Image 1: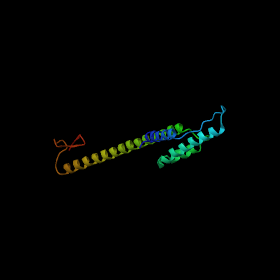
Image 2: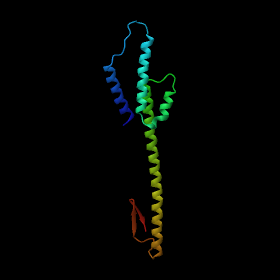
Image 3: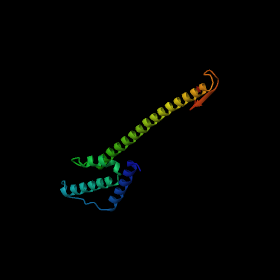
Length: 144
């Protein structure tokens, strides 16, 4: 499951839960420290729940985020983790492409060597280089 899918799923659960419980309201018309602390506690709990659901690939990012002072908002954390996921995907893709290119280069060298060996064997057995015999290897025609 992608991080975006996971975040959407857990956010829906939090919204459903918040709809079922009664969050205290303050009518003192002054910024109530206890109400602010209660909301901060809820946000921090949600952040920890989000971290618990992430797999171990995000351990370093998780640790970096937890070291932030003040602790980041859940939406900021989601963006940071999404960037990390995209970076991992790009890194994996570039590693795949470079290993694929290396594989193709090594195969090309092997093909050229094989064609050379076949040419040597044929010339040693009496065939001439200008004969009309040819071989096709991976779509390339090599004279034999």
